[in-house]
Every structure is written in C-alpha cells, then in structure tokens.
Amino acid sequence: MPKTKTAPDFLLMIATIALLTIGVIMVYSASAVWAQYKFDDSFFFAKRQIFFAGAGVAAMFFVMNVDYWTWRKWSKVLLIICFILLIIVLIPGVGLVRGGARSWLGVGAFSIQPSEFMKMAMIAFLAKYLSENQKKITSLKQGLIPSLSLVLLAFGLIMLQPDLGTGAVMVGTCVVMIFVSGARIAHFVGLALIGVAGFVALIASAPYRIKRITSFLDPWSDPLGSGFQIIQSLYAIGPGGLLGLGLGESRQKYFYLPEPQTDFIFAILTEELGFIGGAIVIFLFGILLWRGIRVALGAPDLFGSFLAVGIISMVAIQVMINIGVVTGLMPVTGITLPFLSYGGSSLTLMLVAIGVLLNISRFSRI
Image 1 (cartoon, rainbow, N blue to C red):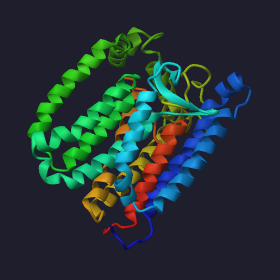
Image 2 (tube, one colour; image 1 turned 120 degrees about the horizontal axis):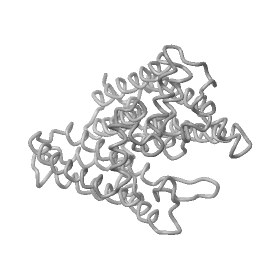
Image 3 (tube, rainbow, N blue to C red; image 1 turned 90 degrees about the vertical axis):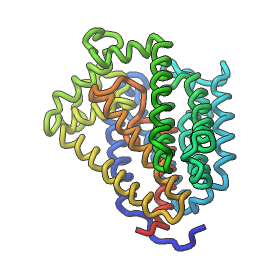
C-alpha cells in the first residue's frame, strides 16, 4: 500500500464544487414553477438537492481521507451487496416504479437507486480483477470473457427494471477499463459486433425504445408523443443565444419541458445562461476529465490507475450521453447530468467517486 500522502488535486476539487454549486442553483431555477404547483413550495426540489449535495460533499471529504486500497479489500463484498439490491428491487411491491422502470427502493421519506451504486461497485471490483490479471487480459477465454461476465450479469439485471441508460453507462465504463488494461482490439471488434446485434435486439423488443430511436432521427414526426421532449429541449436551447434569457427567466420550465430539473437541466441552463453558460459547464467538465486522467497516469499502482480510469470514464460517458440527448444528437436515455441534475442516488454516488479519485491523487507521482 502506498504510504506517501500529499494534498489532493486542487483543480479537480474546485471543478467539482463549482459544478455542484451551479447544479444547486439550476435545480432551483428549473424546478421552482413545478414545485410551487405540485407541492406549494418553490424550494421543494432545491432544499432536497442541497441536502443531498451536503451529504455528498461530506461523504466526498470522508472518502478522500480513506486509502483507496480499502476499495480493493471490500470490492467483492460491495459487489455482492449491489447484486442483492438489484434482485430485491425487481420484487413487485418492494421496488418502486418511476418513469416506467422498477429501479428504486424506498428508505423512509427518501429512496435509493441500486443500479447507480452498482456502477461504483463494478468499477472497484473490475479494477481489482484487472490489476491482478493484466497478463491474462490478452486472452479471450482467460481474461476478456471472465472480466465481462459479471458486467453482463449486472447489465441483465438492470435491463429487467428496465434502465437502458444506466446499464449502458456501466458497460461503457467497464469496456474502457478493459481496453486500457491491454485487451486486444481484434477481440473487441468481435464482441462489438455481438454487442451491436444485442443492442438492436433490445431496442426491437420494446416498442417505446423503437419510438425513441425514430423520434431522435425525426422528432417532428410525432411532436406530441415520442418527439415531445427533444423538441421542447431544442426550443429551450435555441432562444438562449449567446448570453441567455437570464437566470430564472426560462420559458420552457412553465410545464413545456417535463421535469426540467432532472435529465434536461442542461437545456434550461443554456436557455437562461446561453452558449456562454453551457460552455462554462462543459469547460469545468473538461478540467475534471483532464485532472482525472492525470490522476490515473500518476497512480502508484495498477489498481489505483484502473480505479481512476473507471471513475473518470463513468463521469465522461454520462456527460456525453446527457448533453448528446439534450442537444438532439442521441436518443432519449434517461441519463442525468453529473453534479447538476436533481437526484439523490446519482449525486451521492458521483461525489463519493470523486472522493476516491481525490484520494488516489494524494499518492500521485505527477
């Protein structure tokens, strides 16, 4: 275990806090009208987001001071717990259904989404596996297939909810980790063809997924149905122009764009703060990605390096998918924007992950 500790990566921490602050402000701005109408409290979502942000930051600072090798020791236990939770959430009457997916478990006045925590557990376990079996990763039977088996099992359980977006982020993150570990490109090409065929089958098996694809290609073919969210998102982004309509001045949040504080918060942000506001957010994510890559390159061991790669890949993939959906470049997936979108499980998980990354940075050699 590495012994020499330094100060955590300052820029990584500042970028995270800046994104979190923008997120709290935008959650209030985006949700105030809906919260006032539904709960008679314009601060309903903002207060909960502040609570989750506070708890998440506390968890981030706590994890930042816990040696990252602890995750190696407990990775198998955490993975088993997450698998159990993924099974429990599928039980009718136990798992809560929201947005057509049985993805939530109620805990008092709050609820958690087990699939979000599975992403971090899978990253930790896979980092341990790859660091111990890197020489075998070039073998299809001894390295690649065993490393993907648990990933696909978790993906299958997540798809039973169903939650294609979260499952896609987890699989994409794990594929990046395996690729970085030295897996052969030829193996990836073969598996990619199988994956594409499976992905097409998943889409074809559910009519709502086919509608999402067709609405992505031509949202105006069904403007009041499957294309509604994308069209309203574009109507928010377009008028924003360079400087935006002004903070709090969004028009689309007045019951045009459904639940704008979650998946489509970036649309409200660009409507109110314009291209400049959106560019600042993307710039902050760029800093986070840059510093995360430096942490991965400077980690003192393979486990720390793979763990950092997994965390930063998870954030980057989720950001690309969310902004791609909001801007009409990708089909609607239900993926939140890290640190900005409203949500307890996602926000807490992301801040814990950054805490782990900050701890690895304390041992970085660069």
